[in-house]
Image (cartoon, rainbow, N blue to C red; front, side):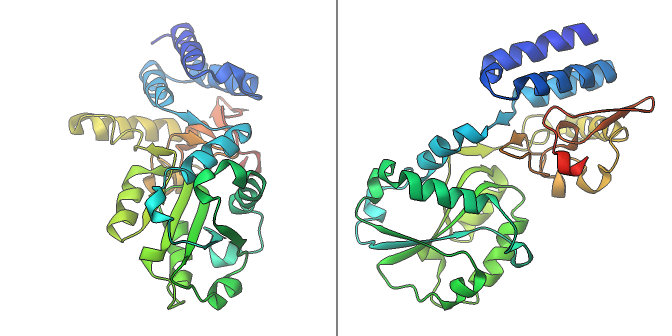
Length: 280
């Protein structure tokens, strides 16, 4: 595929997904155009295939998407509930860092009135693992673990290790709430007994959208692209090979690095379409 044809295709994807309406769409479009111009024909086709299934959730969409996730619960699960404790899905070592969970607390506090199924329920917010360990969950109380995006489940598992130290917290009393989650991770959580309230379920970008016979071929092609992306080896195909196709307020490292890390061509560096500037 020639570069001009690929750029026309990316413009159609922008129109289909209404990405032209987003605040930083011009930077994203510029990043795509430079990237497509730098790739080989087969690589362009792969990038377009992935982008066609991409989710771009802007900061302005967080409120509606998170409220929507909260409202996916059935009312009968809340009939006898009097109080819900919220805790962010974080690793213990990240406790003092600003995380998406804190921002979601703000959304919950500000827009609880929109969550009509919860009108009769008191909300409380736990911010530290010490508070979590001190919690004595009563029969009419629940614990909601929240994040904007759950990728490979690595952070969730670290968080869950701490949750398990509190004997009053059983999986039946815990809900996991997020805007988006990887499909395979959600399956693992459900098998472990955790209900997941979510708005978007994501498939693996290559593995789940292709016949088995061509999956390895396309992964190899992506790794060829990654050779021109400095620092991508540790997140090849996305952290833990998640193969994620999503940008939130910040693009998670589970997403293919071609979408968020600088690309190098003939000694020149170009910003990715959904750049994480702290990673450049």
